[in-house]
Length: 169
Image 1: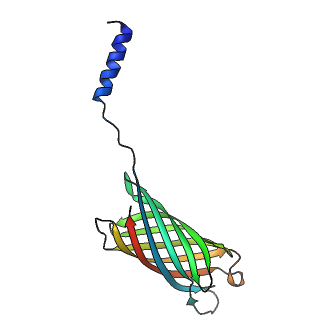
Image 2 (image 1 turned 120 degrees about the vertical axis):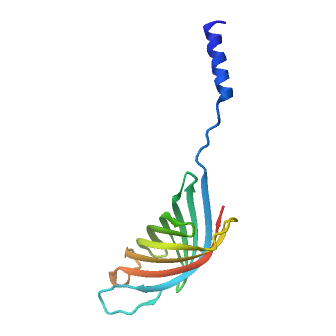
Image 3 (image 1 turned 90 degrees about the horizontal axis):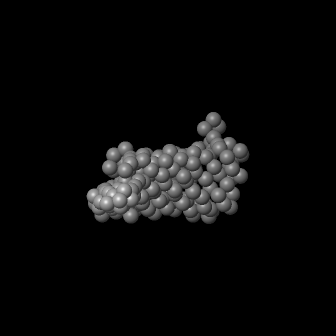
């Protein structure tokens, strides 16, 4: 055999014994929920809390199978009352247990007026089934210091709770 034929034969034999490498697989989840809570415009003044905006929340979360405890989520926010508006959350999500995840993120109302800030919260999944369908309860807290919809140019504080359904896709 010539040296070139030996190399080609060795290469073809090495391919026949090679195993396919498994790549990272994207894991998705999605949900829909309804939420409200309390809001206050400034903790230093003596203003009472009032009912926060009622909103529909549509979270979509992304994880990779090699590190399912850490991920990202995008949540669409559709405010229904006292007026209609929409916005979004961008969240870093971390699993605390199979039934609980925590998140921190940036939140914003985009139209018709703007609000921007940070939020932190926890998602409780009841029950977490192998089918991937579960109910969720999401208490969260947000501080919104920026935007055109701030009352008297003070920081707006939200203590919210949402309830809905989540499915692992």
